Length: 391
Ligand code: NAD
Ligand code: MG
Image (cartoon, rainbow, N blue to C red; front, side, top):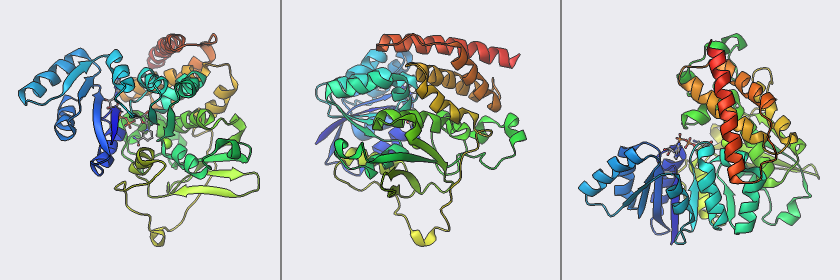
């Protein structure tokens, strides 16, 4: 029996994780569930999974949940705040932590799980983009097992031999695949009038709104390039990106002998989630098997940087001083939130990211405290650019 904490249990990854766990009731015991604001869904999850703890990010939501939990006589302790997120991620009873909060808000609890040596299933790519070297040393020093949940990184992980010392020298490059998002064929002159609902209508996945917008701009792939650099210890030039609209090949590794390994499957996040939960074994995920007789074609093309200007920032950022990725991530979180709130045009997201990267210079961040200060500084600058764009 593995005891698990799910950070962000009410989101798209969180609910898919609970769907997989419900298929294996003999293997997982839920220790804690956490969410930001969705009290009703959290209550339903408490009824279904009987966690010991439920954490709401804010005090008012925690109070509402506590009243409902008490009225129903559920044996769940309700907590609130950032400190509680880190506590339920590092508690001695916990074996596995699913990090599925969106954005840099997930960094502190993910780091706490890494330092406490947990088996850490990482969906929250922004935590690794912001944390970078600090995150990876917490994993190594804490003795944590870091398993990627992002489908591309799970694919690469599945294509590599288990012993890092044998594969590190054999990789020529990796190829991260991308659907290209909902606007991969849209006329460029329509980019300025794209609405949040259009941007969130992803061709193959239903996901949270932030990652949906990131998929439309391909900033999601930029963050994934940075994520891959840290997960697999690669040089920036060893990471390539390909548009593959069908999303059947989830990513590939090209080795020095010109052999290529790929991982394939139906596009369903329960596959990488189940692999993280069952690794090194495999168990049922609930996803449909791939029917090759139904596949008309698998096609590939190079991403057009005029359509996706943010993508190029990934390699620029990786070659820049440490902390630059945290600046890019903060700017992008502010820009996407402003776009979703109707305060910024879709095509201005890149302008905010570019302007923030040009102006906010990191001064060698070494601790979580330094990174959070840099994140706050970049957010404040990005917000001023949003305000200027709106004028
Ligand atoms: P989502 O918006 O559906 O869910 C986010 C979860 O985090 C919710 O439970 C929400 O309550 C919680 N949360 C949000 N802000 C918070 C805060 N400030 N403090 C505490 N909790 C907070 O997002 P998602 O699509 O599930 O994505 C989660 C993460 O997984 C993201 O980093 C995303 O990039 C990554 N990811 C998602 C998918 C996908 O298919 N959805 C695929 C790969 C990677
Ligand atoms: Mg992905």
